[in-house]
Image (cartoon, helix red, strand yellow):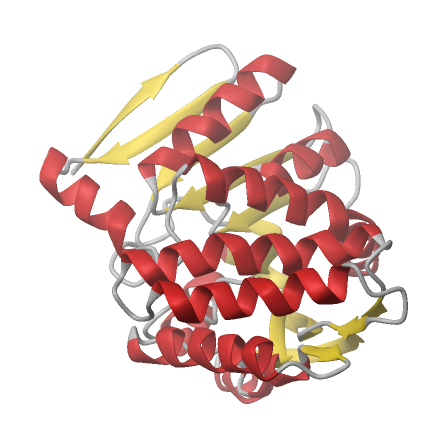
Length: 292
């Protein structure tokens, strides 16, 4: 049973939950859902936007498309999708965090965009609508308990010959500083460990082709996305901001101590001040697949 509130532009649907359960869900996000993380996600989307738009074009998203945004977060990509598909198309966003959905709703109202947004736990709830042309899923498979269940639900939501596009990590340990930093590499190891201990898999893209085939998809295109960046590059802010936010999160969760965090920060600052420093980013694999 669900309830929903409808207004002029954005329809937000919420499953009945107690306040306590909602609070626990927000805390259950491995990276949190507070304002600092919300701001970091906005920066991340701006940095990745050009690469995302290229992938969407290859996947066939255009004016009039009906698109599902899977694990939409605060809706930065949802805004772009709604603007691309226009009044003749439609966008549906599904997201577990009520905090993020509230932000998503406010942003779409501000821009006068029509989006249906649902509070959905992808491991427990069905996707409320179907018949989509394209589904977009970025950095969701790596956090869920069962990527197989996720792929099946996406497949069920697409119409025959519908397309899904994933951006997921395929080699998280490609994230390195040059000159090498034992503390940055220790940080990367701790991030991967924390995700795996909560049921996720950072290198999930390696498993997706088999899961897609099992659920009736054929992979039509792939593209590795890994970059060698310098401190003066805009993209440098993507991993740098993640380190700062996640250090605070790991400390909050009691996984690390303040001294360890300071050593990671010190090495990052040294790299930031070194004109010869370089960083390779965690490798993301773009996978486009068609339902057959």
